[in-house]
Length: 532
Image (tube, rainbow, N blue to C red):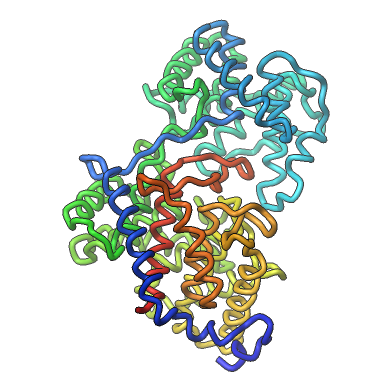
């Protein structure tokens, strides 16, 4: 530990090694009261089937494309009217976002010519392995809306769609069709492409619950008059998720993720929550496990992923590891099989690029078995520490908040007891010190944290940070952040925040209950660090 203690006096204080806040019964009482109030609120959100559900809020992207699709088809004038009202309302709110403004004016047929720079401006600062793919997507969307011409720099090889998660494969195939028509390269399209898209529309529900992907697929299929009936059926499916404000969300539902994360937060929360409620939630979760051992984000979605699977696994283990032994074992096998050769874990498919937050999530979910999977953990921890940025942050993955990747990575580093390499141990201690330094520097004067250094404080980023600090220490930083968080609780007991979840990255989407879930998780970790 000497390397960690001597790393730098300006970065590492003695509080890192002694993180407990002692002798503060008043603060502990306030945290527990806040925690109890929030627990009651979340408990009331649990449905009779054990699930936790919330509506994903409307977004400009899906709403603009849906209005465009309905306008082309010349159907559902009332729905078009509601969408027009929603987008007109959003136009004033999005005046600083050129990309969203371009989407709206394109959908409302008020378009003024734009070039690819509007996409580049929007993507500024987005450094991710999917960035080039997102440019293809965003440029196609603006071209389809008539805001800019289709970009002829793309060739057929840019649209190879095999090997991706289900909805990305379908989106790329659909984009291939849109670019082929937009650039008059019809020879790009073959029979298999069309059949691949048609296969997504062969039921009476929103395929994979992915609203954006379905709209893009339908925009591609409507290029073929012989498939008009399929397009109409797909539109009818989508109409079921139109929100009360007239807009459309990114996804139709998110109940598996919401239930699993709520379960993790509610378990051992130190507040009143009946075992029966947790068991109802656990029974719901085991009922959603798929044949590969993993879980998807919503009912009816076939594509499993590491993120949802990790939260589900953690929850089942916390509720009753013996009762759910079979499901836990299958989930562990799912995770072990998906680890990449570089030690990291991808989100969806082995061989796809590893991600920091998914790697940390997998290690956290597998933590009780870390001694049995020593090599898995050493490879994973080496990957995490190698990817840390100079300022102590990490790539943000599916979140816009720096603190999300930091808290998950810090929790994963607690498994370092299995590490035998002195060099790796030193890297872990250094990474923890750098993460703490970043969190100290990014704390705002009100005690909270924003998505990034300098951003206005928000509840979700503050919650993520408090979870990290519970392992890193620094009593004063933790104390100030805890006071900020408690002040944000409303009379119902819940918390409200700007969203941090993002997809397609870097566009945020909002499932409001997630803020309260992670606030409870933060209060749970914080309460454990305060002694009377």
